[in-house]
Image 1 (cartoon, rainbow, N blue to C red):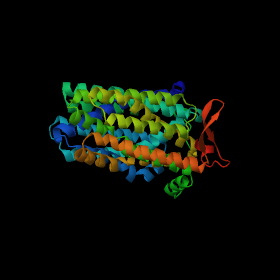
Image 2: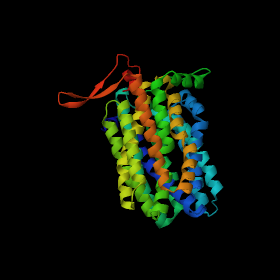
Image 3: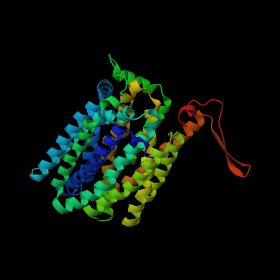
Image 4: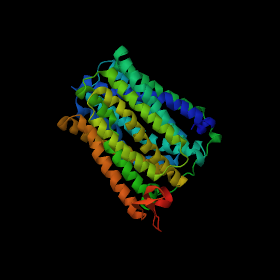
Length: 424
């Protein structure tokens, strides 16, 4: 489960990541609480716009960001982007501390930070394969997700306590300083122990990345599923805030606890994924199906305790979907185009948020907070059903109920398996 930590560079990187991820989640909770309680009167639409602006650059800059990742040393790219995100977070903190913050300030800073994150994301995703050998990529991706969700486990609860104790501004400042941990980790690495991918040269680098994906039906299928999952399923930054405040009438401390409890399931999903030697399409489809059922029960929760506890299996299944899809893409693409493919993957996964977040906010104001979660049940459930039918038809997979050696379920494969050979 923790084999990648035996590699010194990855161990340093992971340590810095835990600190930074904790600060990031503290910053997200503080930012959301600022928008909901101080800059608006619990406006779900304003919160959706802020979230959308943070992820809009993922779509706008994805091709260029992937080309940058494949053209320059990924470690140096990350040092620059992490520094810019630290400065943006500090600017937001200072605006709040000095009492001059307005909603348009948050909109602007969210967009600027999103631009930095759009360039940082592909480099960070592809950098994993430079720190660890191919046999440990799935493990490292799983541990990265575990690090992210360790921060998510600690960050929201800590943010709730700090906001109640010292206020939103100082909590945002903690997030700003947390970026230093990643920058220090990147500087402390031994570059001679990295295995950088070949540098892409010449013109047409962006077109080459798009053409590569266009001729890979397995990648298109994965990215379609992850688009639906990211756009309509992974909006808990909005949905949890609305459910906690509007449906159950809770305050900032309980809102922070909700995020931490959900992170228990997410952390479990990440660690389970780290144990798997090879990601499979059946795991991706199965976990997305379970996620759809979990969101149904979460959206219909009768009370706050039930709602909070159901977020544990929801987080576990959601994280299994993300880690499995990420690992499948990284392991199946050529090293020289990995940065561009991961940029497209990040654009598809997180770039749907500018579309989904405002829609989720509108649904919350029009139909109520519960429907912001139930929309995930409908969209993700439909997507995984259609994907399963497509895979079965493409690979001539037939499932029959028959009595055979005490078992009733029989699965038969056809002679041609264009997708099954790669991803099932």
